[in-house]
Length: 203
Length: 207
Image (cartoon, rainbow over all chains, first blue to last red; front, top):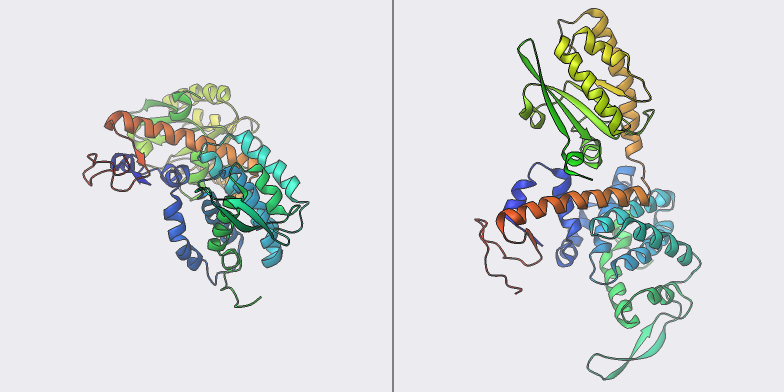
């Protein structure tokens, strides 16, 4: 994302609006490219309330740096991160999840989603997704047709699992969503961000 | 929301050869955000009402609102109360300046359900009683302020957060539209290299 120098000048003394520009017009490429340095910046820092709020803010930015079904993606991520926070930072999980919800709602509105749409979707999905225990279950080899017309087989989440059910709310094909979500999740380094520690080799 | 709501009203009054600027603004996200950064004074919670409008009093002519800290700040729950008190405050300052009896009465007689005072000014020439009153008022307000700062760190909830985001977007788009009207080119682009460093448009590589 690039802004006109005149806009930069106009917003020079306005911290709030200046900070809102990259949130209103997020650059997927830039955010993902800079993400490893964001993770590194939070390493070895204790999870104070301020730090949790900061982490939730950057994670929301990362989550929304996607080009497909942004709102549904946010609702899915919220459920997934809530579970990750429960596992890795149990004592701070509630506060972190609240901050994350705030940041997601705030940034979605900055991107132009209607307030009622954001709150309605987040509330409905939170209720629905709470019932799914497993994310993927035992993956099922599924035959898919690629864009060039050839057939292939891909492992997709099993029926009744979070990802399988969540993808029904998305517009794209399940295999593309599965790939996109999986890739974004791997790139997120959620464990490192939440705990401030490096991922153990085996856990 | 009209332009007056966003940008507020400015009144300049004169007393004894000195100019004072009264600035009435909608107490929205911008002020709250800046307050969290410690840049300006702030009541958010702990007050007896939710502040929606603010009158700030500055010493000097109108441009001081961008460069100086205010001498006094008053908060109101609605526009009607703020407009009514703006007239009262204007008359009080014209009559006796910032340390005069009418202004002190304006502060003292305020209904706490309708007006919150933040008096930053402690004039050395003012009477001991008025200094004491101002100090006590400030101490009380500092307590509220500290409480508000703590409260501001708590999660706001999805609805309030989304409202805040929507309001910010609205204001940003107004600024962007102004810049685009002025320059005749898009103010924001996803494509790198769209502008030269001097601000003149370069060929769009995405076109």
